[in-house]
Image (cartoon, rainbow, N blue to C red; front, side, top):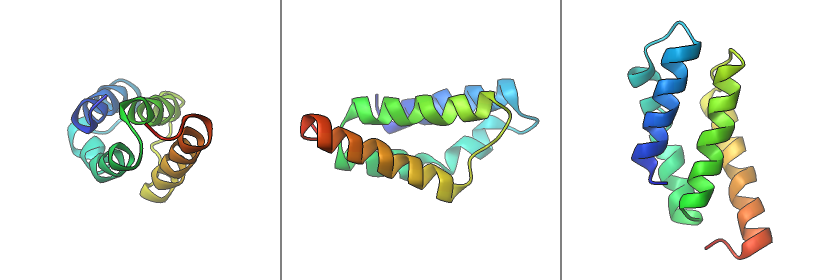
Length: 85
């Protein structure tokens, strides 16, 4: 998954789950998705988008620090389990 697609997935989750405008809120996560894409691969971007969308579906929008911590976990897991690419 490309970072732009991940932002769009999160945008839809926010629109459906929270009383916020998804396009404005989800755009703030794009740098995090881009960092994951650079450090790992599209599967890692997808894993992060899924994790963040699940959090949103539960009624909470992750803070930038929480999104970055989740990104670090996803990237570290990918590097540890499959070499990162």
